Image (cartoon, rainbow, N blue to C red; front, side, top):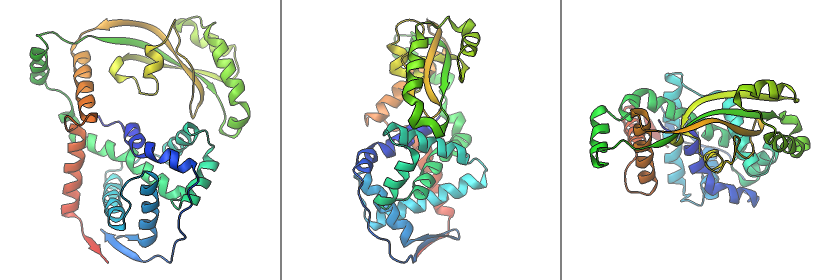
Length: 314
């Protein structure tokens, strides 16, 4: 399935450094309608904000590119609304908070920088909402085609000397030292110290919830079985480098977290094989060696929406 977080990260990675330089955007003139997509207007103000956003990403930022990107985004937003698969505002705010925290800024500071850059926080969050919601719609429509069939699995194994690939299976728990949003700046360092100190005393997964109850505002979430290719990229290096039964800590939108490794073993079942083969395909796609099926499905879906849409340029 399409990883929405990776999609957002791909778009935002190039923007982070430029945002931190505090680039100032041009003053916006009075808006005029530049295009209408199924009754939804795209104004010159919208185009200017998208141009500012594209400049932060160090990509082509002419008005035509910005306008076409907004038309595609509008079509996606309309389809997301039609099938009622939008993420919540809370999900969008949490993603925005993670991006801010990743750049060592509060959401308020990030909002100020976006405003100075001529992008605006609402435009940015609108972008995030579509990037998070659209993969759900694509997966709902094409999800069955994103899995490898038995024939595909057998074919890939034949190419692999008839052997199923081996990967690591983990049983994981997530330990969260909760930090209220209002206190992030004041107590993050203290909570990180508490989380680090607790790792050496961690009694094991069976006693994790009893252990957490002895500390203030600490929660435990059972993640269950997770194969190595399934582990989110933010956590994967920490899991692979773990010494003992806990990983290092990370500051997230929830607080300070680490993972407890309840058990791990090598497996080579059909699910593991599919995961490994799909990860290989994803790595090839990133290297430009192959087209991602998810990206192909997204393009196909969007092309259909464009053909059916009433798009008027002004």
